Image (cartoon, rainbow over all chains, first blue to last red):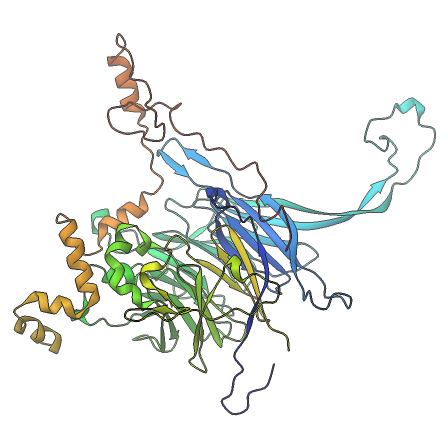
Length: 449
Length: 115
């Protein structure tokens, strides 16, 4: 990385690195990726899909022999995390789709992650086994019981090396605590607790205890007719274990302090941008609904994503965001059809890079956008098989709004709204990103000089 | 009340002109033209209630048992070609509810070529 000379920041040149998944058209629903998350070191990359499966990729060690294959991600483990259920009592179908995966920081040789569907959170342990005991007294090498009469001597079993096996086991199941659909989970910085949030309530769990949780936020009105907003996302502060935020369908963010009271229905801070009443339309509230909220790594800022913009807020300023970035403002003139085809309800996520200097979010047509907070420059890139030659540099894309369309621009009317990039992830310290495009996972890296 | 926005609004008699100024308003007009019965409350509780009820499939054991009792002597209406549509005149049975089988197949992200 070239150190900044004055205000100069080198623009990142993104290159194609890998793509996972099948090329076939006609995706099976189960293969649609529903969440992507790097672990705290970036060594592991997890994906969850609609079929309830988790696939974990591991970055291979950089070797002197293959310098050009800079740390590629290969399959490390895969398992079925959740299965479909039917609640006959409530006539409710419970999807197995993995809504979120969150990693725990590594504390020993094993890896731990939380995965959740609409109703149940599970703690999974992923561990390696590269030795196995041999020389049992009562069993032979194939595991069959030996006739005790034939045993004349005793031996001590020894551990011998074996081919690496990666096992995933469910260590905790946190069930039956949510009446509504879980949209977020967040591991606390104390590493002992985590929270799960549904449309109306947020619960605090201890990792060791599965049959109890504390309800810390409850916005369910006494009379459901009075329901005006729901919780859309929630996250713990990265360093202060008493602080968390949650966003709403009305475009507001509340910051709560668990030291203030057991039930955090009264917020400590309330973030809302005032709206010009003359701009109000039928769509205003829908497009202001926040689909994702993320603390910066520093803990000083929060980023929110609503349908058309990404906003950065300073925790010290509640009355408006400090930065607003237009993701795809040209969709404003398409809101009617986007409402009809339900796209207006798509929930896009947003991510920070490791140094909180660049933010990224997805759009349609397999486009994704990055905004450099320092240079104020932005770029639109595309995740497509056409740009998937190894180390090929991604060319910036441009959407043309009206009038003359230049040769390599695409017009708003030609955008494919079925190709949506809702989930992306950024390596915690390097310029490596993972972009989920329906059933394919793309990995892009910064071009090495 | 009394802000510049309000003054603008009632001075501009022709609402068409006002809507033309904002793309969102033009889109709203389009939507209301297509669906005149669309709720007065913009983006209000209707969505939220729909969102909270996601996943609801309609099997009511009370209906089912009453229908069974009433129709003891008649032929029960058999499931239509679309087993997923369990509403309306057809009395749903537990057998009709789509059996959700988990994906026994390994994710395609984990199989196949590593590029």
